[in-house]
Length: 304
Image (cartoon, rainbow, N blue to C red; front, side, top):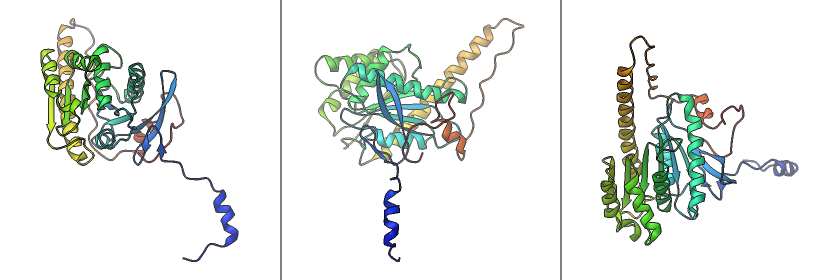
């Protein structure tokens, strides 16, 4: 290739630099888009990735471990990509050491997902997920907000960190109080606070009467950076079942309500059929990143 004329160099240097694909809170974003949320009076960067299907199965909010960014390789990074490939709208974010700060982040993230999924019709199926400290924070939040809005339909807790003392006891009480399906997945070569508390997490969930609690022990792993495929396969499969069961319960409740309807009233509308698998259209992809009521885009980052 011939050398560029010297006169062209100043022009090339004056061109704008390509958009940065690294953010301190988000890490390097190779798939997804950085979006900004307002949480507890502060602006928070999160990574969103649109589902690889015409219509999302639901939304998944992922909270990283303490000191990790929103694309951490141990769990949150693989999950945000893998679950989007499986048809979910994902949003991942960093956690904080302050419980109030985490609560605000979780609420803001769930609202972001719900607003973008509502145009799909019906009530969106929302999932909370977290890794390490993030798993503990999401469990604690969910136990205290069981009747909150937007409603959460399932929890995915990866390598849940249960510290000694009051903080850990609060996490165990949360597992006992949660009444939605829970996947408690962990590597049995991981941190002591994760591995040695696994039996107690299971015991508390059973004591609370949660028949939809499942614990999945993965042998020989500290975290999932060496085997992200196992994590994604287990979580995506479990979430698909949890979503189908939730839909079946909703249909049964609707049938019971319809049966109680007095004769002569208008029939209950059927829920729209879900679109099948297929190539995602450009408008499908972009609408997940456009704020409701806005015609413009949002955020920055790489491809979807």
